[in-house]
Length: 381
Image 1: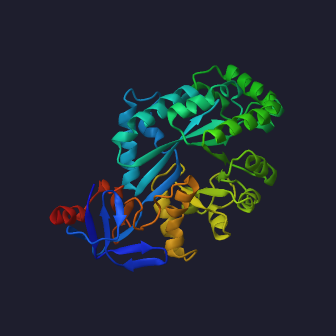
Image 2: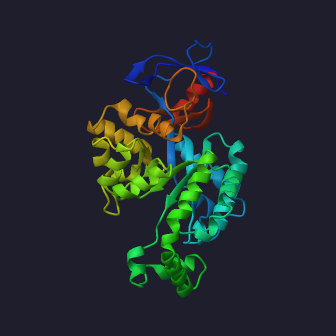
Image 3: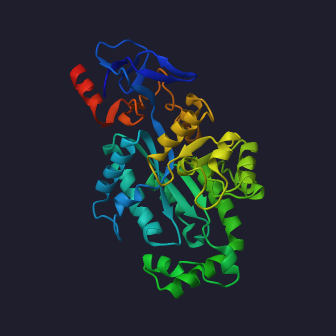
């Protein structure tokens, strides 16, 4: 861990940038002066990005069909990408779905075990999230025990079954390709989907029991792609208080009104709208229905989204950056990070004059550094 004092940089505080030194020692931010100093004039120091939901790591684990035999090496490569984008805490969201293949329960077990066993070798704080398909009724038994063994503290519930088509007995689009990716006969795959749809009435009671059990284990829970007030209220009653990527204003408003947390996708913000035609994340942010912005599937996007919000005048810089730092910390219940305050973890990102990531530090350890700033560190130390 570095024990240094950074001087000359603009440091982001609660009200904006401040011209003041910033010291770190033993992995935390300190209010004491340090004998070793690094001149960061021309740079800006901000709280490290906390990515509350991202699945962009998938291509590192399975760049082609089938998983890498050395999955921990794929995780280390994914960590390098997170660090290069200023992310100091990253939640890796892994599917367990009827879709099979890279989203199967078996593959989820491999990934989550690898994260559990590799976390200690990474500088970035990597945390697992299980994205569980609600209609996997045969997988409910024993799931709480698996979640405990994996060290998963955050579970999000999805339902990606195309119920409208299945109710009519019609095959969904792309079902053949989906089946082949999962290694299934397309007719068998379709029959499986029809059977899961047929058992829809069993799902609410199963979810009630599962959520109650996970609450006793201290697991945080979220829902995904909510669209109605009624649906949000049902999740809230189960102790599910995070709404990831709500599809409608109605769902976002319902979550906010119930004192829940709303997580929006950074790519939606950068692009100016949802690629699926859902409600605009930018509109929800302006209306006050956003607690955190997540990378979703693109790790450069949280930084870009926060900078865009600040430069556009939608909110001031501290508020905008708070959506990728302080806000996500609060969503995850992490009280030891998210701001540049004495006593908190020394998680920070240094941006150059072009707003590119020059350095990333997680708990006072360098996870990424590039360009001129490296010379300054070497010269000072």
